[in-house]
Length: 579
Image (cartoon, helix red, strand yellow):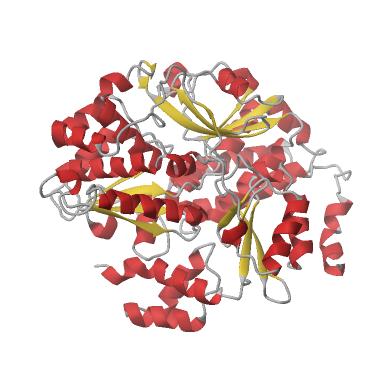
């Protein structure tokens, strides 16, 4: 049985880090005594998360986005500018202890790159000149909060004729009233009629999950909103939480009413700390209006409230059972799948988990009715989908499309620049070429209709981009973010990266391509969670769809002595040591 206090361990560690700038040995001991567990166990939790530091990390901590889109948007120049302005080298602290400079994967701002989090406040569309000004102002005493940027929503496209679902005008609370009129069974019937599937990438039928949790006899029950939007290139949930958090909260309320829950929890990724004031204000407004608390929404005996749990930086916590472990104050390692969360989830109680977009969609479907919702999209794939578009295009941002839109139309809408390689649903998704531009974006059976399912990210790369370097960036991300519990993922991601490095240096042989395929098959078949199962997707697909490109990257025959040699790369370590 988990100590209830332990659910507050991440919050307590955040308090210590904010106070001292890092988590001290005395803080570890204090947490251990508070929870009556070993200091080693607390250390294991603190060391798991990217944003927790056990050594001084600077009074002001700077995290610069190093995703592949950021790399193509001037990452190196911005990194150099920060190093020169602060005196800190990447991954370290300046001599005065004032600034810590670190690289981090996608921070949910891929439409406004280069970007960084400074004191967990957003700074977007950076230039070397802007970096110099920011650092000068902070040296003069300005706080990151006082000089940070206002993040643009960048909603680039909505369906015509007011057919938007997610940004339509509606009265807060009206969907909950409609849910009460329908009753729990009626809500589930509406979700089934609307064919709403999970919008985080797994596309599991929402009504089945809600119904299964409703039928569980255990109490209390919980509703959890997965706002750990960590897939590189994805920012759709960020925009929803910026522009229409009311719909997300109302979706959680409807979920709580339907399954008979009393508490809702939003697991918010640490990169979105700057959204906390907006979300807390919305929660306060809901309580003031009687939509949260005792008899929530005026529904007798429906006592339901929502709190926010801040994460601490771990991509794997997007996997629902890893997120539950994190919420319980543990390392965010995926659980073995003995039970589904609807059976034994948070604190081993029945738990309903959906992501931000899914809860918002559920609220709108309940409020407008499935019959109206189904007028959008195509048969078998009704409604609309939010897509984060970034990369080589003139109009990066959020696109709400009706299911069934061809890839070519989306490329035209965002004014793509000479598109060559598109990555759908992030690094763990599917890569496509321009030969597939007529494929539709939908939820239909992929084998029958050849359509593409998009969980939320659509990255565009033109012909000037080095495809192998793109794959290396993805591979480094997965290797770093793997929790390391299972061997296929831990070893497989390391091996895939090494094989891609050989391709990058023109030293690979045909057998190395087979190694990527073989290890990919092992990872997909035996990894413990979705991270390991999906990490090899893109390298394997890319070798099939861009076969000639990979053949051209192979080196000399294995028995040749005339192998490629990169003198600059070979001497890089020495040059760095000299400087």
